[in-house]
Image 1 (tube, rainbow, N blue to C red):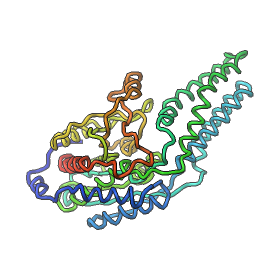
Image 2: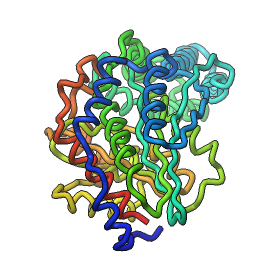
Image 3: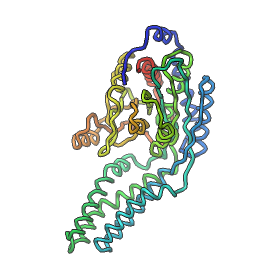
Image 4: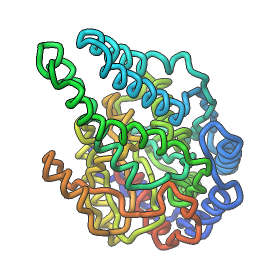
Amino acid sequence: MAVGLLSSEILKNWGNMAEFEPRLAFEHLDKLAYEIGPRLAGTNGEQKAAEYIRKQLEGYRYDVKVQEFKFVPRASRTRMDAGLLLAAFVASLFLPAQYSIIAFVAAISLIYVLPRAMPKSKSQNIVATLGAKNPKINVVIGAHYDSARCTVSPKLNIFVRMAFFPAISALTICLFARLLGAFSTIWPIVWGLFAVIFFPVNIGMFLSTSGRHVSPGANDNASGVAVMLETARVAAESPTDVNLTFVAFGAEEQGLEGSRAFVKARKTLDEKIVLLNLDMLGVGKQQFIIEGNGLLKRTRTTPQLNEVLIRCCKSVGLKPRLWWATLAGHDHIPFLRANLPATTFTTDVLVKDRIGNFLGKLLKLPNSRIRGYRYIHTADDIPDRINLENIEQTGRVVLEFIKTVK
């Protein structure tokens, strides 16, 4: 992907464009998080939000399409996973070594197979396009509009995410070692030691999906959608030599289901397409560019695209930092796995981050950190906590990005 500046004629047209109005953006945010409120994927709230976004984009004279898709709710999948693993683990105390391995492998296999037969919910992406006469590149600006269930405890979620794979890996090694003759006389003791970790992980998986309430999602991610919609309004009034696509992703909180569906449905996506994903832009004075995601299975964002975004931030007086999101996923990931340039722009509060620093040093992850905004996935993620200056600054960055990338 080549990057650079557009022609002076195009820049002149952009110089005469309408200004980004943070007040209008905040009206979108207030509509989504306050009036519509919780937007759990597959519910009436999410549907109302999708309809609102569609009408706004049509009002800006975009060609708008609704891409429907089905998904298995994350809560159902997580509880099924926990139940199968717990059953296999308990069975391993009583079964011979060879049958313990069979039960464990069967549980892992069912985790991958059973979701195909589980009841599915419906969601949708709202896709708005604005074509140029002689497009040089297809720029996608995306933001998810669904919100998540309220978390029982942020620390519990971190514990489950950090302990799950080590616990499963250690148990797998232990079961194979037992099959080869190890622990033959002390297996109940070894099993009891594993239970100290395995039971809390399983209980944590159940509890993490037990919340009955759904977050209003002002920062996560009505803020991203608000910036996207106001950017779309401004962009619609100014000519460019790029094809613009604005996508409101559904079911992001269910495992990036909306962005997966978008990429899957567009297998013939132009190789020049780039994605700038907007996620949680309303709080914190520090701007971040997601450098990568994951602990063991790592996905790195496009360095060239990050460099463009850094320059765009600096051009409006901001000093962004890179961030390796160790325990979080973003809608750019399906694009990257389809070999499409993509990254995510976000903001956050700066706090002491012992866990992020520890994981970074342990696993040699650059710029590792855990999100500092403490109201994520809670009932307190409300419009009153949103900083209007954040909305204005990030809107200017997105507009600079559209002008600059090519």
